[in-house]
Image (cartoon, rainbow, N blue to C red):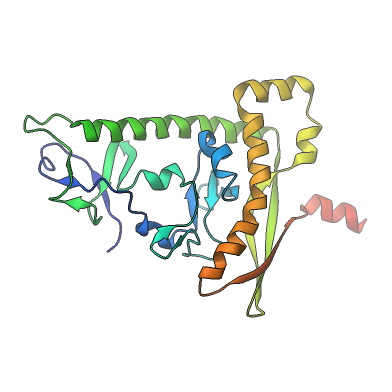
Length: 254
C-alpha cells in the first residue's frame, strides 16, 4: 500500500497506537535518502553521501546513496538492514515533520503496518502527548533543526562554487553497463585554494568537516558493490569520475 502522510490530530487519532519496533522494510524501494549535516560523519563510514539538484525547483539537497539503481535499496536484504548506520530520515518512520499552515507539524503514514490498535499510545485519555510521542516529537524537532543547518551548509557551499558534477560508471556481472549522472560532490582542488579566512570560517561553522566527510564517503561505493551480490543484478565494478563543464571542454578543445 502506498505511503500516505497525514497530520497527527489528537482529536481524530487519540486511539491509534504505534508498534515501537524499527521496521525498515518500507525503504526497500528507496535508493536515495535525505541526509543532514549532523549525521554526515557517521554515514560516511557506511554509504556514499552526495548532492543532487531537484529538477523542478533547482534546489540542492544532500542524500545518502542506498543503491545505484532506481527503486532498489541495497541495504535492505534478507528482511533486515545490512549496515551499522541508518539515515535519520529513515529512522523517523512512520512519522515525519512537515509544514502545517504557518508552522511545522507532526505527520504520520496512516497506511503503515506499524499503525493500528497495538503498541504504544500517542495520547493519554485527557488528550496529552504520551512519553512515547514526546520522545518522537523531540527526535523530529532535532531532525528539523539539523535540516535548517544543512540548508545553511548547502547555501555556503554553493556560494563558494565548490560543487562539481560527478559520474559513476557501473559494470554489472552480466556484462551490461550504465552511467549514473545527476550527482555532485565537493571539488577538493577548489576547496584547497580558498583563502585561510574562509577556511577558518568554514571550520568554525562545522562545514569543513562535513565537506571532507562527504568526499571520503565516496569510497563507500565499494560497499554498494559488495551489497549488490545479494540483489538480482550484482555489480562487478564502479568507477567515479568528474564531469567536465562546458568551459573546461572548450579549454581542452582550444
